[in-house]
Length: 360
Image (cartoon, rainbow, N blue to C red; front, side, top):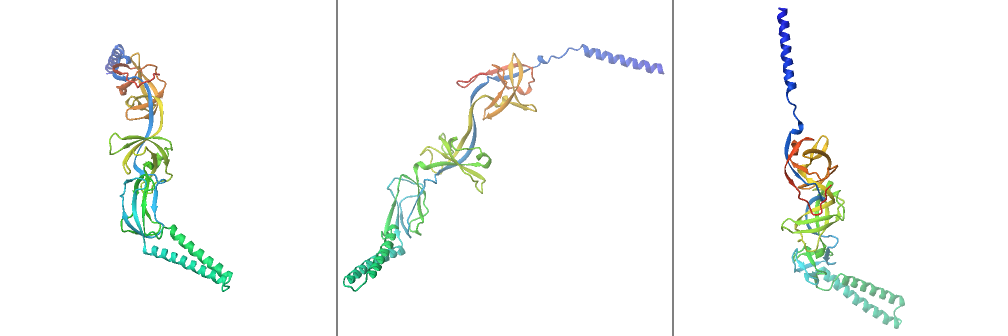
């Protein structure tokens, strides 16, 4: 029985040894013989812009808005314009009539001056007849001066005119019209707001985080959301230092050419945070793994992995920097299956470049 077991083990060992011999005799697989089909482009340079998109509308510059009012109580007799209307300098805007109280105060002030003037003349005559004293004449002079001062105050407020026509002090547009014909108003109440035509500006809304990246002087491309192909250049003029309590957004003012957009027109703004000349590749050319960002270039028919630092990107291109291979094309399709040193079969090589592009 022992001899049988020993013989079986020896036979098994021989079979295993033969299998190893067969494996050793099998031809080795050459990694370079494995190839992949790829598409490539030429590495090129172009100007890349880091932009921030925001939305808003055209609004008047509050610093240049002129509020028209009358420093006395009265009634709006007629309104000759409407909200948003453009007006010329000297054009009638509305007609204002004094209130009964204003007219009464004017009449009282006028009569007080007449009475004080008569009293002063009577006292001066009595003084010549030695029937009044110099002190009484001085008191009459003061009463006349006080009455005249009160009348001048009424005149300064415009009292006594009955009706007054307000006209445009400059070329502009009606940005606010809080009154209508027949409205009674208090002294100094705002009747109309007029904005210069050149004072309009775009006001964009940004998140608190994005607003921290924006500075006055940055270039902005402003486009209408209702009129296609209407795009105008602008510039950031101010950034609000407070956030809206309800929307939690921060307003950013952008100056634009006069007349480019209508007041209240909705627009988008592309704020250029920074721009620079950079090496660029299509976004699909850049891959990422545990070692970081990288791309493949083709040299002598083989794939070469190149570590890169990715930067600004847009819808198509991405900025990259690294130790590139001079003149070697960059793989854009088929790069996911590549390994360093793998043979590649280039299906198409795109040599498109922007004017003035340079090669590394």
